[in-house]
Image (tube, one colour):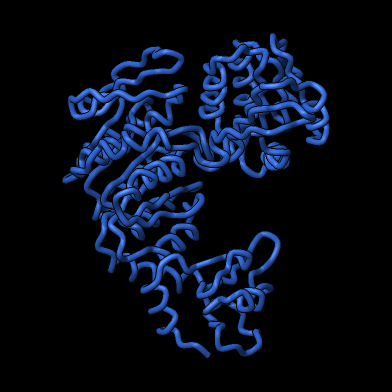
Length: 454
């Protein structure tokens, strides 16, 4: 039987060794046998060992004796203890990113720029809940210069717990939008929950707060932040004097964006105006400037930056021998991001009769779910597209009560959506897919993207 101290020393001294799926196990990894939606990880203990796991952690006393398996009564408490120890040992700069939407995209963007010149640690995938943050801390490289964590919530009290665990000194709040309204009810309550990340009572390590204040709910963050002592507030919105978008103008067949960075003009050229990407660039430039890093490193690499999978990444596929462009926004959705994605599609310089929209349900919107879906379709209907394909009960009900200008087509069965597309698409059509995670359209997007890539 392995000793606790042996495992703890291994976790603290190593990086990126914790896995929760036996499929991901490599030689030297640690497998956590956790209870999942369909199976308990205990079922895969010996598979993990066969694949090279150095240690396995389980809460099941009734396993066959094996020197690589460790029993603990409560895995989460056990991991939390080690995570706190490892965090206390870390001497690099810790960055915490929260907000309603865009956490992963900003994390990946900042990591993309920083890793060119620095050793960094950053959470994989969208690891922003209690388990995800614990794993990210346990996988931390103690020799890295920067560590970037996503900190998420879908209920009250979670931000203060995770902030106390991570203790970020540099904090980004991307936005406050209509997410998890089932629990939070209003955006103002979401703002108050998110604010806990910079409240000294829960995070006495915080030093800088990066904000984009463009709504009443986001102003709540700014108001609360101003009451905190020894907290520097860095804004990247129109009211900022240091970091903001000065001008957007046509440039040949592209766009030139003029940014103001600490009273200096900076120009970038981009093929599309996608505001959340520009805001992320501003966040990164502000971070670099505030930490005396070379902003030229960001500007030189910006042209190589690609969207994150499921969050705007463009795929070229062949569907029924037709060349199609897919804008994959299928990872998640709320009313604000869905409308912004539609506007981004509208702004692409291609005739609208070449543009197809596929929308799936927006989850966790609470009692106003129908009203929110209905309002979105009203807003969408201001522009005519080739087709608007809908899936989900709230969109089905909304379509019945609309007299639209667009051809809104509702399907209950995603197989029929595939059949419809094969019959109706033409070469160089653009398809935008936007939906919440774990919906029919989210699963459909994965199937569609398996079509022949070009």
